[in-house]
Every structure is written in C-alpha cells, then in structure tokens.
Image 1 (cartoon, rainbow, N blue to C red):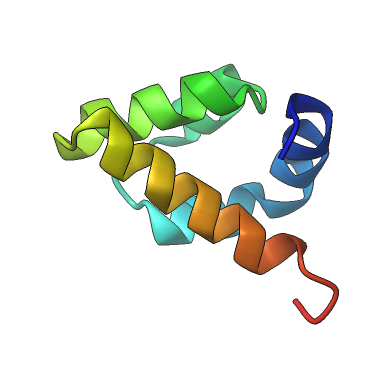
Image 2 (cartoon, one colour):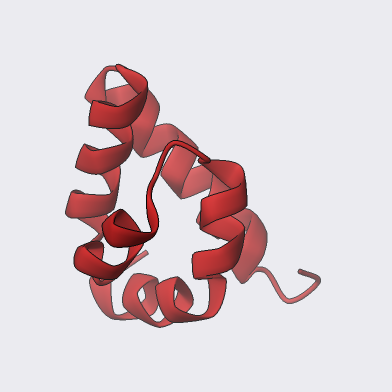
Length: 70
C-alpha cells in the first residue's frame, strides 16, 4: 500500500485505529497525520513491539479495512 492510499485511509479510519490500538492517544492520532512509517513507529513505541510485528499489524489492519467488502 503506497503512502497516498495509506494517508487517505488514515483520515477515514482514525477512530477505528484508536479502537484497535487503545494505547495511542488523541494527540498521537493528530500528530501522526497518516504517515505509515510514523504510525508503525508510534505503535511499536507504545506497545513495545519489534518493528516487524508493528508493521505486520498495521498492514493487516489497513488491508482489512481497505477491501471493498469492508
């Protein structure tokens, strides 16, 4: 998923992102601005995950929510 698609989905799905990763604050959601690398990094930081796990979780979440049946 390229950064433009990710950024567009970010705007649509911020509330669901907050539900999925409750350790992200409202300030986190506002300052991240839909940058995929920053989202992955912040989730990695908040949850203490390795980068690969955070990246896999973010990709899975957005792939599920970007499909036509979502």
